[in-house]
Amino acid sequence: MKKFIIAAFLLGSIAFESNAQTQYKIITTVESIVPGGLGRSRIVEENQVMDYNQFTTERVDGKDSKQGDIKRGDAKIDNMYETKILNFYSMAGLNFQNIASNDAMISSKLNAMAQEGWELFTVVSGVESDAGKEDGNGIFITRYIFKK
Image 1 (cartoon, rainbow, N blue to C red):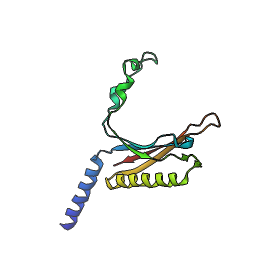
Image 2: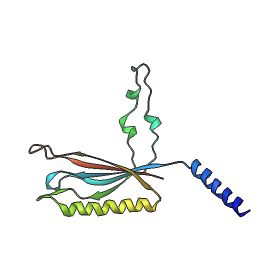
Image 3: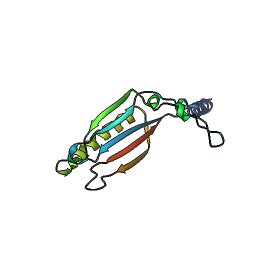
Image 4: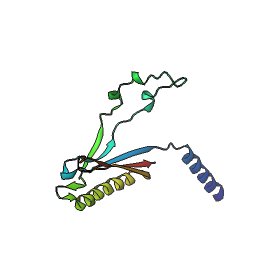
């Protein structure tokens, strides 16, 4: 009888788990690579549900698209969280204290997400770096993709 109850419980747990809907959430960090500390660096998180279907159209024969009927402004959300972090550069150049401070802030956010039950699924990053003397612009962007 005990074995039957345990087996039923395990099967029920597996069935419940297989029916559970997986959710994904993306947190983005943007760290400025602008000399003199003039850039803006943030941790950004959406706080509004979006349905991509409202902005999706279908092409037939590779020609007609109804994308012109969709306004870009309608695709922008109004509700988000922004956490200020520091720029990579200060007036003296690369600032390692700022980098360590950002690491502490990002770790704090990642730990909070883990406490909320989110599992870090993957991390994707990219750089648009300073292209030399005449440029002076750049960002380091990282997307943390979570699931639960």
